[in-house]
Amino acid sequence: MKAKYDVVILGAGHNGLVAAAYLSRAGLSVLLLEKNDYVGGATTSQKVFPDYDAWLSRYSYLVSLFPEKIIRDLNLNLELRRREIASYTPYARDGQHNGLLLSNVSEEVSRRSIFELTGSEAEFNGMKRFYGLAGVFAEQVWDTMLRPLAAKEDFRRRFDSSDAGREAWRSLVEEPLGRAIERYLQDDLVRGLVFTDAKIGVFTHPHDESLLQNRCFLYHLIGNKTGEWKVPVGGMGNVARKLEQTARAHGAEMLTRVDLRRLDLSGKPLVEFECDGRAQSVEARFLLVNFGLNVLAKILGKPYQPDATNEGSVFKINMLLHRLPKLKDNSHAATDAFRGTFHIDESYEQMKASYRQAAHGQLPDKVPSEIYCHTLTDDSILSPELRTKGFHTLTLFGIDTPWPLFAADNDAMRQQAQARFVAGLNGWLAEPLEDCLAQARDGSPCIEGKSPVDIENALGLYHGNIFQTALTFPFAETKEETGKWGVETEYENVYLCGSSAQRGGAVSGIPGHNAAMKVLERVRSGQT
Image 1 (cartoon, rainbow, N blue to C red):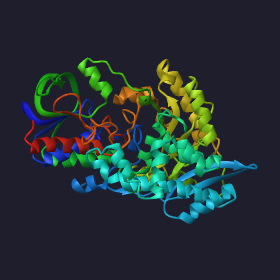
Image 2 (image 1 turned 135 degrees about the vertical axis):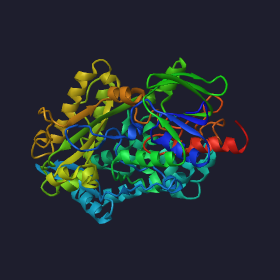
Image 3 (image 1 turned 120 degrees about the horizontal axis):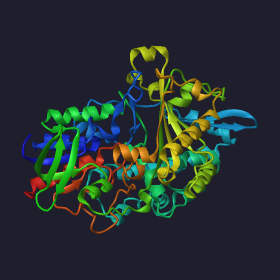
Image 4 (image 1 turned 30 degrees about the horizontal axis):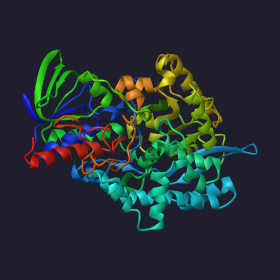
């Protein structure tokens, strides 16, 4: 290892790997330092249940926001596979169980299913018009995500040329998202299905004046101009693995099991750390930070004062099943229901109620959640033996479970929340989920719950916020931000390359790309 590098990157999550790949490819010397004994951060795949050869995406799950441009630029051999089914939402009417099934490949399937639910074509047409607004927004915004930030007013003018553009801007940027949802949609189940994309990972409600729900919704709907969420073949760890291979191939060096001791940012960035019991230090022309602002503040011995919207609100459950459970709904196959996103207790009114309860410090009576089965689209994460036996993985993301609920007694509340999420799913199953779970050698079921406290402890994400900080609108909201990359810090030649950067969040690689572009911009202009 050298004493000086052009770029030192703190944290080898997928964004750090994207930055390393771009910068090493440009001929700069790059060193990545990672605290864990593996590379990938939240995009890791792990043998969550050691008795079985199944590699689960432990923290993250699907991919939508990873730009095709980055895949092309870095020549990544990465397959993101389409799910035929977008979502399944079970419901019961007049004692009969059924499900709302939306397709990614057939508009007619979606139309017919909504008609069965509502008895008219109006709700499907309203949904189509509403999602059309997101499509208009995505068309205007997506290509700008990999460019310097445009001023908000200049950005708004992009939408002035049509009525649809003006309506998209008003509905998605200027007013709380609940107003538009209530204008376009009337059915409680459909409203809830739409609004879930505004709540995953954050603690908010339809009429939140902070517009946190709007920002979260946009990031779920603009990816590659379609907003479609795809399955990473080989699991999420394969995304990190391909990026690592590319960065190493261009000369980037990586160290794991690094204990970061001190950062000196008074001059050229100096990093002091221990690795394998040996104290070391390196100097960098540029320092990229791929962890949260909370972690950076702690290392520098400075206070961290986050906004209330930075609070994390998520509960993750990983499961290994020896078979898929049967549904109470006899009109849909379980393989269809679990192939897409399976929504549980996520009607509009249910989520209003669960938000109110959680805001008052109570675990909601019904905790909304959504589940998907990776192995129905890509079974390569299972050994051939498990595939033959019919094993599957399930991933659950729960909402309205903010960090404060778990802060006092994480272990007890984790168990209580996990039981309540399982009970919610069991309400729609013809048999208990517990009967379908694989068992470890010691007889314990193969199910793992992760609360916001667990996620913060494992990954350093502030209060379990899977986006590190509150998601931002994709434009500059102040004059000072205009023309910048959204990665700048108060320190010379120190940039954010992770989700704490503007336009960060989710598995996207966008802040990693933008931090790399900022460095290259400085290098090419002769500024160091």
